[in-house]
Image (cartoon, rainbow, N blue to C red; front, side, top):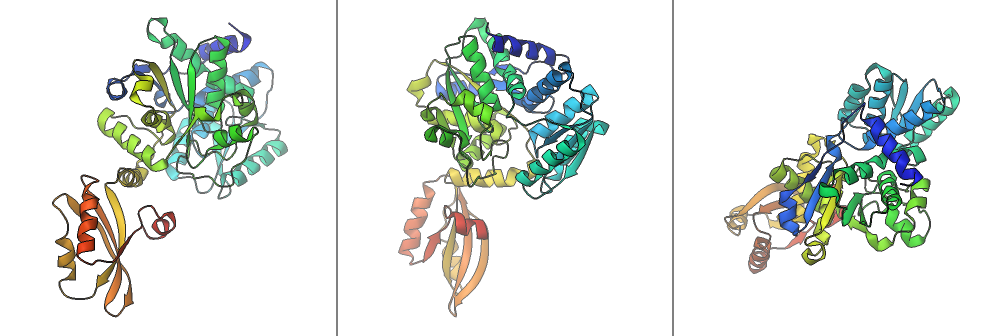
Length: 418
């Protein structure tokens, strides 16, 4: 076993005083769907419901072993890193200061405070993460505190690599995964796990998954250097990173860009709803990335293969559930939004409703404005049980002479109106 793998094994062992290894579960439902043997590495079942506790604990352990006795440890995060950091601070009795954006949902602030207790202080600074991160760095420099980065540090990477060590220990009958699918945000998990597997010479194929709105690894691999994305869709907040870590990219740059799959955010929502309804598993968007990527594999490509999916987190705020369901319905073609030119006459609404089938339902009806004396613009949301029903509806709209515009996929209009 090479040096990195030995260090990871030691890190994994040191974690047992804080939490047991997370389970590796063979999932019958996904296995039947794909024809493969699907194993889920359930990082959503860690004490803080994500793998981030691993890197934070390893960072603290290494720093203290080196004799680095900072008065205060500092981090900037609006999510899982803050919670892992807080949990470790309380366990080790170390003072921590956590910088979070002012826009952080109260639920995340409360959970972080619960994990850290009296050991941590939370400071809300700035509307955006970059502002918050700069404030944390300034505070650490002025106070002599030690920054604990979310992913771009060798000790963080080593801690996250313990996921890979546990997988190798947990695979039934000592078999090696044929394929491993890893979610990617800043790259700490993917950099650590892939390096560990290389060190133990496991012949496993890797596929990485990013949200379509934040493809920092894929774009960096295409360019052959780290790129900072000009725009990021923050819906998959646990993986919406504008620039992959420097050390992380150094360890990942030899992979092909074709090994990185991009997942549409709305399709991801359908996977979250499916896993909740069928398996009772609560996943945050980033936690569902690896599972969702299965949809891109032809059945013949993975049939009979041993496939491990890392479920990276389950910190889901249920206040987001209506939005997740909405996105899922739109992706599956079961809900659409239209702007109709509605005649201002008695019986017009009844005429329109008569066009609907028994499986069609009006989910939203709202007058936007009167565009003329005899007509008005109306926003209508329609849900149905079968996506094919919209083909029938469009035919009926045309035959009835109804003027309308489908704005379901129009991001600008939908963002303003829906």
